[in-house]
Amino acid sequence: MLETTPNQYDAVHSTSTDEGFGLVISVISMQLINSTPDQSQTHIEHALALLGRGGSKDRCYVFEFSNDYSEMSNTYEWTNDGITPHKDELQNIPSETMPYFFERMLEDGQVLVDDACKLSDSTGGFRDELLRENIRSMMAVGMFLEGKLVGFVGCDLVNRQTDWVERDIRQMRLVADMIANTISRHQTEARLRATEEELLQANAKLAQLARQDSLTDLINRRGLDECLEHELRRAVRAKHSLTLMMVDVDYFKRLNDEYGHLHGDEVLKSVADILQRNFKRTGEYVARFGGDEFMIVCPQTELSELAAQAKKVLTEVQKLKGKLGTPVTVSIGVTSSIPETTTNTDDLMREVDEAVYLAKQSGRNRMELNPQFSTD
Ligand SMILES: Nc1nc2c(ncn2[C@@H]2O[C@H](COP(=O)(O)OP(=O)(O)OP(=O)(O)O)[C@@H](O)[C@H]2O)c(=O)[nH]1
Image (tube, rainbow, N blue to C red; front, side):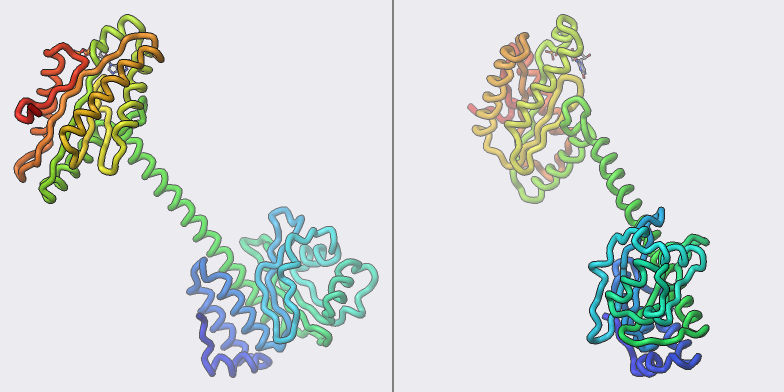
Protein backbone atom coordinates (compact mmCIF):
# COMPACT_ATOMS: atom_id res chain seq x y z
CA MET A 1 0.00 0.00 0.00
CA LEU A 2 1.41 3.39 -0.94
CA GLU A 3 1.28 6.12 1.66
CA THR A 4 1.25 9.81 0.88
CA THR A 5 2.38 11.96 3.79
CA PRO A 6 0.65 15.29 4.65
CA ASN A 7 3.68 17.12 3.21
CA GLN A 8 3.29 15.27 -0.05
CA TYR A 9 -0.40 16.17 -0.14
CA ASP A 10 0.50 19.82 0.38
CA ALA A 11 2.98 19.48 -2.44
CA VAL A 12 0.60 17.86 -4.87
CA HIS A 13 -1.84 20.67 -4.32
CA SER A 14 0.76 23.26 -5.17
CA THR A 15 2.60 22.08 -8.25
CA SER A 16 1.96 25.41 -9.82
CA THR A 17 5.13 26.46 -8.04
CA ASP A 18 8.54 25.05 -8.98
CA GLU A 19 9.16 24.11 -5.37
CA GLY A 20 5.88 22.17 -5.09
CA PHE A 21 6.43 20.37 -8.34
CA GLY A 22 10.02 19.52 -7.35
CA LEU A 23 8.70 17.78 -4.25
CA VAL A 24 6.12 15.80 -6.21
CA ILE A 25 8.77 14.76 -8.72
CA SER A 26 11.08 13.56 -5.96
CA VAL A 27 8.23 11.54 -4.37
CA ILE A 28 7.33 9.96 -7.72
CA SER A 29 10.97 9.32 -8.52
CA MET A 30 11.64 7.64 -5.15
CA GLN A 31 8.64 5.35 -5.51
CA LEU A 32 9.42 4.39 -9.08
CA ILE A 33 13.11 3.76 -8.39
CA ASN A 34 12.28 1.39 -5.55
CA SER A 35 9.41 -0.40 -7.26
CA THR A 36 9.65 -4.02 -8.34
CA PRO A 37 7.94 -5.50 -11.44
CA ASP A 38 4.99 -6.82 -9.42
CA GLN A 39 4.44 -3.32 -7.97
CA SER A 40 4.61 -1.76 -11.42
CA GLN A 41 0.86 -1.23 -11.88
CA THR A 42 0.32 0.31 -8.44
CA HIS A 43 3.37 2.53 -8.45
CA ILE A 44 2.94 3.93 -11.97
CA GLU A 45 -0.76 4.58 -11.34
CA HIS A 46 0.19 6.30 -8.09
CA ALA A 47 2.70 8.47 -9.95
CA LEU A 48 -0.08 9.42 -12.39
CA ALA A 49 -2.36 10.24 -9.45
CA LEU A 50 0.25 12.57 -7.93
CA LEU A 51 0.77 14.19 -11.31
CA GLY A 52 -2.98 14.54 -11.86
CA ARG A 53 -3.90 15.88 -8.46
CA GLY A 54 -0.99 18.29 -8.45
CA GLY A 55 -1.87 19.79 -11.76
CA SER A 56 -5.65 19.66 -11.30
CA LYS A 57 -5.97 17.30 -14.23
CA ASP A 58 -8.95 15.06 -14.86
CA ARG A 59 -7.22 12.08 -16.34
CA CYS A 60 -3.57 11.03 -16.60
CA TYR A 61 -2.43 8.01 -18.57
CA VAL A 62 0.30 6.02 -20.19
CA PHE A 63 0.00 4.55 -23.69
CA GLU A 64 2.48 2.08 -25.10
CA PHE A 65 3.08 1.54 -28.83
CA SER A 66 3.47 -1.82 -30.48
CA ASN A 67 6.98 -2.35 -31.88
CA ASP A 68 5.98 -1.39 -35.42
CA TYR A 69 3.77 1.55 -34.29
CA SER A 70 0.77 -0.13 -35.91
CA GLU A 71 -1.23 0.23 -32.70
CA MET A 72 -1.18 1.56 -29.16
CA SER A 73 -2.73 0.52 -25.85
CA ASN A 74 -3.62 2.42 -22.70
CA THR A 75 -1.58 0.56 -20.07
CA TYR A 76 -1.94 2.81 -16.99
CA GLU A 77 -4.59 5.36 -16.07
CA TRP A 78 -5.62 7.63 -13.22
CA THR A 79 -8.94 9.51 -13.24
CA ASN A 80 -10.14 12.24 -10.94
CA ASP A 81 -13.38 11.83 -8.96
CA GLY A 82 -16.40 11.80 -11.26
CA ILE A 83 -14.35 11.25 -14.44
CA THR A 84 -15.04 8.17 -16.54
CA PRO A 85 -12.04 5.87 -16.99
CA HIS A 86 -11.39 4.78 -20.59
CA LYS A 87 -8.47 2.41 -20.24
CA ASP A 88 -10.39 -0.81 -20.91
CA GLU A 89 -11.84 0.42 -24.18
CA LEU A 90 -8.54 1.95 -25.36
CA GLN A 91 -6.65 -1.25 -26.14
CA ASN A 92 -4.91 -2.09 -29.42
CA ILE A 93 -6.03 1.13 -31.11
CA PRO A 94 -4.87 0.97 -34.76
CA SER A 95 -2.66 3.95 -35.64
CA GLU A 96 -4.57 4.44 -38.90
CA THR A 97 -7.66 5.54 -36.94
CA MET A 98 -5.79 8.64 -35.67
CA PRO A 99 -3.18 9.54 -38.33
CA TYR A 100 -2.90 13.15 -37.13
CA PHE A 101 -2.01 12.14 -33.58
CA PHE A 102 0.51 9.47 -34.67
CA GLU A 103 2.22 11.76 -37.17
CA ARG A 104 2.61 14.58 -34.61
CA MET A 105 3.86 12.20 -31.95
CA LEU A 106 6.40 10.54 -34.26
CA GLU A 107 7.64 13.88 -35.66
CA ASP A 108 7.49 16.19 -32.60
CA GLY A 109 7.56 13.70 -29.72
CA GLN A 110 4.52 15.46 -28.25
CA VAL A 111 0.95 16.47 -29.00
CA LEU A 112 -0.62 19.52 -27.35
CA VAL A 113 -4.25 20.55 -27.67
CA ASP A 114 -5.39 23.73 -25.95
CA ASP A 115 -8.94 23.48 -27.20
CA ALA A 116 -10.28 20.42 -29.01
CA CYS A 117 -13.24 22.47 -30.31
CA LYS A 118 -10.80 24.55 -32.34
CA LEU A 119 -9.02 21.63 -34.00
CA SER A 120 -9.30 21.77 -37.77
CA ASP A 121 -11.11 19.17 -39.86
CA SER A 122 -7.75 17.79 -40.96
CA THR A 123 -7.26 16.29 -37.47
CA GLY A 124 -10.11 13.89 -38.33
CA GLY A 125 -10.58 10.88 -36.07
CA PHE A 126 -8.39 12.38 -33.34
CA ARG A 127 -10.64 15.42 -32.80
CA ASP A 128 -13.74 13.21 -32.92
CA GLU A 129 -12.30 10.92 -30.25
CA LEU A 130 -11.49 13.88 -27.95
CA LEU A 131 -14.96 15.35 -28.35
CA ARG A 132 -16.57 11.93 -27.84
CA GLU A 133 -14.80 11.79 -24.44
CA ASN A 134 -15.68 15.48 -23.71
CA ILE A 135 -11.97 16.35 -23.63
CA ARG A 136 -11.26 20.03 -24.30
CA SER A 137 -7.53 20.19 -23.51
CA MET A 138 -4.99 17.41 -23.66
CA MET A 139 -1.26 16.98 -23.66
CA ALA A 140 0.79 13.89 -24.54
CA VAL A 141 4.56 13.70 -24.22
CA GLY A 142 6.57 10.88 -25.77
CA MET A 143 8.36 8.23 -23.73
CA PHE A 144 11.74 7.43 -25.28
CA LEU A 145 14.06 4.53 -24.57
CA GLU A 146 17.51 4.67 -26.13
CA GLY A 147 16.17 7.21 -28.59
CA LYS A 148 13.18 5.11 -29.64
CA LEU A 149 9.66 6.37 -29.04
CA VAL A 150 7.92 3.63 -27.05
CA GLY A 151 4.74 5.39 -25.96
CA PHE A 152 3.59 8.53 -24.23
CA VAL A 153 2.36 9.95 -20.94
CA GLY A 154 -0.58 12.30 -21.21
CA CYS A 155 -3.33 14.13 -19.40
CA ASP A 156 -6.81 15.42 -20.19
CA LEU A 157 -9.05 18.19 -18.99
CA VAL A 158 -12.69 17.21 -19.34
CA ASN A 159 -15.27 19.91 -20.19
CA ARG A 160 -12.75 22.63 -19.41
CA GLN A 161 -9.93 24.28 -21.25
CA THR A 162 -6.42 25.54 -20.61
CA ASP A 163 -3.56 27.01 -22.62
CA TRP A 164 -0.58 24.79 -21.88
CA VAL A 165 2.60 26.62 -20.92
CA GLU A 166 6.24 25.62 -21.10
CA ARG A 167 6.28 24.60 -17.43
CA ASP A 168 3.43 22.07 -18.01
CA ILE A 169 5.37 20.42 -20.84
CA ARG A 170 8.59 20.33 -18.86
CA GLN A 171 6.85 18.67 -15.91
CA MET A 172 5.14 16.12 -18.11
CA ARG A 173 8.42 15.29 -19.85
CA LEU A 174 10.14 14.59 -16.54
CA VAL A 175 7.36 12.21 -15.51
CA ALA A 176 7.38 10.57 -18.96
CA ASP A 177 11.14 9.92 -18.65
CA MET A 178 10.76 8.42 -15.20
CA ILE A 179 7.88 6.17 -16.20
CA ALA A 180 9.66 5.07 -19.39
CA ASN A 181 12.73 4.09 -17.39
CA THR A 182 10.62 2.25 -14.84
CA ILE A 183 8.75 0.27 -17.50
CA SER A 184 12.04 -0.57 -19.22
CA ARG A 185 13.68 -1.64 -15.95
CA HIS A 186 10.68 -3.80 -15.07
CA GLN A 187 10.70 -5.41 -18.51
CA THR A 188 14.41 -6.17 -18.17
CA GLU A 189 13.89 -7.61 -14.67
CA ALA A 190 10.94 -9.69 -15.89
CA ARG A 191 13.06 -11.03 -18.76
CA LEU A 192 15.86 -11.78 -16.30
CA ARG A 193 13.45 -13.65 -14.04
CA ALA A 194 12.10 -15.61 -17.01
CA THR A 195 15.66 -16.52 -18.03
CA GLU A 196 16.47 -17.55 -14.46
CA GLU A 197 13.33 -19.69 -14.37
CA GLU A 198 14.29 -21.32 -17.69
CA LEU A 199 17.77 -22.02 -16.34
CA LEU A 200 16.36 -23.56 -13.17
CA GLN A 201 14.06 -25.76 -15.23
CA ALA A 202 16.90 -26.74 -17.56
CA ASN A 203 19.08 -27.64 -14.55
CA ALA A 204 16.26 -29.67 -12.99
CA LYS A 205 15.80 -31.46 -16.32
CA LEU A 206 19.54 -32.14 -16.54
CA ALA A 207 19.57 -33.47 -12.98
CA GLN A 208 16.63 -35.71 -13.85
CA LEU A 209 18.32 -36.91 -17.06
CA ALA A 210 21.49 -37.67 -15.10
CA ARG A 211 19.42 -40.05 -12.95
CA GLN A 212 17.40 -41.56 -15.78
CA ASP A 213 18.04 -44.53 -18.07
CA SER A 214 17.37 -43.40 -21.61
CA LEU A 215 16.26 -46.79 -22.94
CA THR A 216 13.65 -47.66 -20.31
CA ASP A 217 13.02 -44.25 -18.66
CA LEU A 218 13.61 -45.94 -15.29
CA ILE A 219 16.01 -44.35 -12.80
CA ASN A 220 19.57 -45.46 -13.50
CA ARG A 221 22.34 -46.75 -11.27
CA ARG A 222 23.11 -43.26 -9.96
CA GLY A 223 19.43 -42.67 -9.12
CA LEU A 224 19.22 -46.08 -7.47
CA ASP A 225 22.25 -45.35 -5.27
CA GLU A 226 20.58 -42.17 -3.99
CA CYS A 227 17.19 -43.82 -3.39
CA LEU A 228 18.65 -46.88 -1.72
CA GLU A 229 20.82 -44.80 0.60
CA HIS A 230 17.83 -42.65 1.50
CA GLU A 231 15.49 -45.62 2.11
CA LEU A 232 18.15 -47.47 4.09
CA ARG A 233 18.62 -44.52 6.47
CA ARG A 234 14.85 -44.21 6.82
CA ALA A 235 14.45 -47.92 7.59
CA VAL A 236 17.23 -47.73 10.21
CA ARG A 237 15.61 -44.72 11.89
CA ALA A 238 12.09 -46.18 11.83
CA LYS A 239 13.30 -49.75 12.52
CA HIS A 240 11.22 -51.12 9.67
CA SER A 241 12.11 -53.63 7.00
CA LEU A 242 13.76 -52.84 3.70
CA THR A 243 13.70 -55.16 0.70
CA LEU A 244 15.96 -55.11 -2.31
CA MET A 245 14.98 -57.20 -5.33
CA MET A 246 17.15 -57.86 -8.37
CA VAL A 247 15.68 -59.00 -11.67
CA ASP A 248 18.11 -60.36 -14.29
CA VAL A 249 17.06 -61.44 -17.79
CA ASP A 250 18.04 -65.05 -18.51
CA TYR A 251 20.42 -65.81 -21.39
CA PHE A 252 20.14 -62.25 -22.59
CA LYS A 253 23.44 -62.38 -24.43
CA ARG A 254 22.12 -65.33 -26.47
CA LEU A 255 18.91 -63.41 -27.17
CA ASN A 256 20.93 -60.47 -28.44
CA ASP A 257 23.15 -62.69 -30.54
CA GLU A 258 20.28 -64.62 -32.09
CA TYR A 259 17.67 -61.90 -32.64
CA GLY A 260 19.76 -58.74 -32.71
CA HIS A 261 20.48 -55.86 -30.35
CA LEU A 262 17.27 -53.99 -31.22
CA HIS A 263 15.19 -56.97 -30.27
CA GLY A 264 17.21 -57.15 -27.04
CA ASP A 265 16.28 -53.51 -26.39
CA GLU A 266 12.58 -54.32 -26.86
CA VAL A 267 12.91 -57.13 -24.31
CA LEU A 268 14.52 -54.77 -21.79
CA LYS A 269 11.78 -52.15 -22.30
CA SER A 270 9.04 -54.74 -21.91
CA VAL A 271 10.55 -56.13 -18.70
CA ALA A 272 10.93 -52.55 -17.38
CA ASP A 273 7.21 -51.92 -18.09
CA ILE A 274 6.19 -55.03 -16.18
CA LEU A 275 8.30 -54.04 -13.18
CA GLN A 276 7.00 -50.50 -13.17
CA ARG A 277 3.41 -51.68 -13.24
CA ASN A 278 3.96 -54.09 -10.36
CA PHE A 279 5.98 -51.83 -8.04
CA LYS A 280 4.49 -48.37 -7.91
CA ARG A 281 3.56 -47.85 -4.27
CA THR A 282 4.94 -44.80 -2.48
CA GLY A 283 8.56 -45.45 -1.58
CA GLU A 284 8.99 -48.22 -4.15
CA TYR A 285 11.65 -47.57 -6.79
CA VAL A 286 12.38 -49.55 -9.94
CA ALA A 287 15.81 -48.93 -11.47
CA ARG A 288 17.83 -50.26 -14.35
CA PHE A 289 20.98 -51.33 -12.60
CA GLY A 290 22.86 -51.89 -15.85
CA GLY A 291 22.79 -54.20 -18.88
CA ASP A 292 19.99 -56.73 -18.35
CA GLU A 293 19.75 -56.19 -14.58
CA PHE A 294 16.99 -54.32 -12.73
CA MET A 295 16.70 -53.42 -9.04
CA ILE A 296 13.61 -52.74 -6.99
CA VAL A 297 13.63 -51.03 -3.58
CA CYS A 298 10.58 -51.79 -1.41
CA PRO A 299 10.27 -50.40 2.09
CA GLN A 300 8.09 -52.13 4.69
CA THR A 301 6.80 -55.00 2.58
CA GLU A 302 5.80 -58.43 3.96
CA LEU A 303 7.93 -61.23 2.54
CA SER A 304 4.86 -63.29 1.59
CA GLU A 305 3.53 -60.29 -0.36
CA LEU A 306 6.88 -59.84 -2.10
CA ALA A 307 6.99 -63.51 -3.04
CA ALA A 308 3.54 -63.12 -4.63
CA GLN A 309 4.65 -60.01 -6.54
CA ALA A 310 7.80 -61.78 -7.76
CA LYS A 311 5.75 -64.74 -8.99
CA LYS A 312 3.48 -62.36 -10.84
CA VAL A 313 6.53 -60.79 -12.52
CA LEU A 314 7.86 -64.24 -13.52
CA THR A 315 4.49 -65.09 -15.10
CA GLU A 316 4.08 -61.76 -16.91
CA VAL A 317 7.62 -61.95 -18.33
CA GLN A 318 6.96 -65.46 -19.64
CA LYS A 319 3.87 -64.14 -21.38
CA LEU A 320 6.05 -61.63 -23.31
CA LYS A 321 6.69 -64.46 -25.76
CA GLY A 322 3.24 -63.74 -27.22
CA LYS A 323 4.12 -60.08 -27.82
CA LEU A 324 7.82 -60.35 -28.74
CA GLY A 325 7.84 -63.74 -30.46
CA THR A 326 10.81 -65.09 -28.48
CA PRO A 327 10.84 -66.85 -25.11
CA VAL A 328 11.91 -64.54 -22.29
CA THR A 329 12.41 -65.37 -18.62
CA VAL A 330 14.04 -63.64 -15.67
CA SER A 331 15.73 -64.74 -12.48
CA ILE A 332 14.88 -62.85 -9.31
CA GLY A 333 16.88 -62.47 -6.13
CA VAL A 334 15.49 -60.89 -2.97
CA THR A 335 17.02 -59.73 0.26
CA SER A 336 14.97 -58.29 3.07
CA SER A 337 15.79 -57.23 6.64
CA ILE A 338 15.31 -54.65 9.32
CA PRO A 339 18.70 -52.99 8.81
CA GLU A 340 21.13 -52.27 11.62
CA THR A 341 22.77 -48.87 11.98
CA THR A 342 25.94 -50.49 10.65
CA THR A 343 24.26 -51.89 7.51
CA ASN A 344 25.31 -50.18 4.31
CA THR A 345 24.05 -50.31 0.73
CA ASP A 346 27.00 -52.50 -0.34
CA ASP A 347 25.81 -55.15 2.14
CA LEU A 348 22.35 -55.14 0.57
CA MET A 349 23.78 -55.27 -2.99
CA ARG A 350 25.99 -58.22 -2.08
CA GLU A 351 23.09 -60.09 -0.47
CA VAL A 352 20.76 -59.57 -3.41
CA ASP A 353 23.50 -60.51 -5.86
CA GLU A 354 23.99 -63.80 -3.99
CA ALA A 355 20.24 -64.43 -4.20
CA VAL A 356 20.19 -63.89 -7.98
CA TYR A 357 23.23 -66.10 -8.38
CA LEU A 358 21.37 -68.81 -6.49
CA ALA A 359 18.32 -68.37 -8.75
CA LYS A 360 20.54 -68.73 -11.85
CA GLN A 361 22.28 -71.78 -10.37
CA SER A 362 18.94 -73.33 -9.48
CA GLY A 363 17.70 -73.31 -13.06
CA ARG A 364 16.64 -69.64 -13.81
CA ASN A 365 13.06 -68.39 -14.29
CA ARG A 366 12.60 -68.40 -10.51
CA MET A 367 12.88 -66.31 -7.38
CA GLU A 368 15.29 -66.93 -4.52
CA LEU A 369 15.52 -65.19 -1.18
CA ASN A 370 18.93 -64.64 0.30
CA PRO A 371 19.32 -67.92 2.29
CA GLN A 372 19.31 -66.21 5.66
CA PHE A 373 15.73 -65.04 5.00
CA SER A 374 14.30 -68.38 3.93
CA THR A 375 10.50 -68.34 4.02
CA ASP A 376 10.38 -71.97 5.07
N1 LIG B 1 20.24 -55.11 -26.45
C1 LIG B 1 20.96 -54.67 -25.43
N2 LIG B 1 21.90 -55.47 -24.86
C2 LIG B 1 22.61 -55.03 -23.82
C3 LIG B 1 22.42 -53.74 -23.30
N3 LIG B 1 23.25 -53.58 -22.24
C4 LIG B 1 23.95 -54.72 -22.12
N4 LIG B 1 23.55 -55.63 -23.05
C5 LIG B 1 24.00 -56.98 -23.26
O1 LIG B 1 23.45 -57.80 -22.23
C6 LIG B 1 24.22 -58.98 -22.20
C7 LIG B 1 24.29 -59.50 -20.78
O2 LIG B 1 24.78 -60.75 -20.84
P1 LIG B 1 25.30 -61.58 -19.62
O3 LIG B 1 25.71 -60.64 -18.51
O4 LIG B 1 26.36 -62.54 -20.10
O5 LIG B 1 24.06 -62.34 -19.09
P2 LIG B 1 23.09 -63.40 -19.76
O6 LIG B 1 23.47 -63.72 -21.16
O7 LIG B 1 21.73 -62.88 -19.54
O8 LIG B 1 23.34 -64.67 -18.88
P3 LIG B 1 22.64 -65.02 -17.52
O9 LIG B 1 22.45 -63.75 -16.77
O10 LIG B 1 23.64 -65.93 -16.85
O11 LIG B 1 21.37 -65.71 -17.83
C8 LIG B 1 25.55 -58.66 -22.83
O12 LIG B 1 25.70 -59.38 -24.03
C9 LIG B 1 25.48 -57.16 -23.11
O13 LIG B 1 26.14 -56.82 -24.32
C10 LIG B 1 21.44 -52.89 -23.92
O14 LIG B 1 21.20 -51.74 -23.54
N5 LIG B 1 20.75 -53.40 -24.96
